[in-house]
Image 1 (cartoon, rainbow, N blue to C red):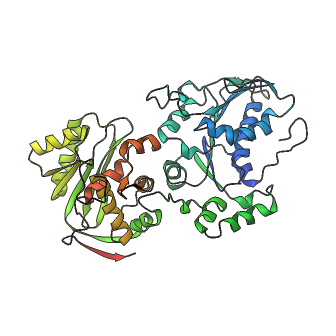
Image 2 (image 1 turned 90 degrees about the horizontal axis):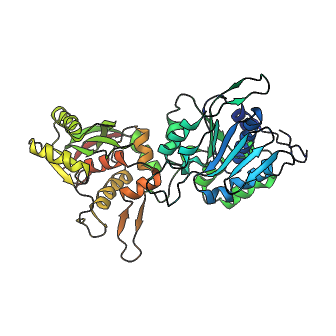
Image 3 (image 1 turned 180 degrees about the vertical axis):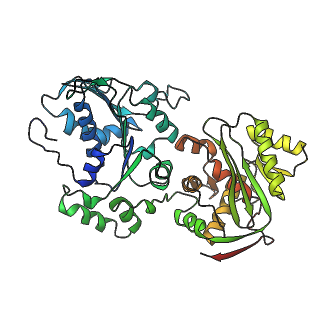
Length: 443
């Protein structure tokens, strides 16, 4: 695309061309820094806006402040700075009206602090045919899912045919490699109507010749950054504040471990909404997921399902999060005579180096992973969830703290259901005690 002033010409390189030509509804152009991702989405948004009269497209990041620092300068260059293209720019409302009657909406998707508890308050008001999200890994999956329902919403005119209709829906996102729902959805699971296009710095032939070498020199002692941010390698995505290191998790899914003793279940009960009720079984050092269900109608239904699993698998003990809605499940199963144990994460830890029981339990699983003695299911949702849980050490007393549920929900948009169920299954000495038997066959 050539700007009307003919000073700058957008000549997309092959990866960008593939993105522009993609017909899938959900597109991820993700990987390296300097890979031309933001330029691609801004130009794609402009192409969509100009292709139809009266079209509506939106370009966003999670934080408005981040949008202004990063995406907005690209919008200025390729849209706002083009003479004769924009008829009105309302900076208060974050809208840009083009000469053909189309409108570009931009800004942040994160609700303001005045909107108490409504994660979807911004996206609920969107009426678009194409949605663009820069650095989509910052956005909670629940919000992304709802945002996808806001396209297509506007009938507009195709100047080539004169037909008035809804254009094909388009949700085009960018990001750098990160653990989480984006990786699971676009790369690991490869869902229908989803397309992943890798971004690599050496694909962008418009960069200065010295750019790539300068970055390689700067990150000479950080080969994982080179792989992740220059080569766009998603397998190198690691959160260094993470409690569970990604290579440990990957090794645990490949490790063949024979079932051992004891057999114990860990149960995390959904609090509603998008949360899952998850049951994890461990047999010695081998873990597997017996149940992961969303939307169970009531506590008694959960009780029946968990009771059925106990009857079938006959664990020595079933450990249940007995805070909040989980207490009802624990109380009823205890009343029915099942051997259940209440898990109270906020209780005082046995070892005073941990802030509470939750930190102690989580650290125990970390030890098993670090030692290379635990076998985990090849369950991408669980792996991505485990890989994002963070820990910190208190500066005053060096106490180890693990990120709380409320903080995880705020940051990721969902509860760590798989992680909690797994940790409960191995908690209270499980896996670290001398009495546990398990045979590791190979790595």
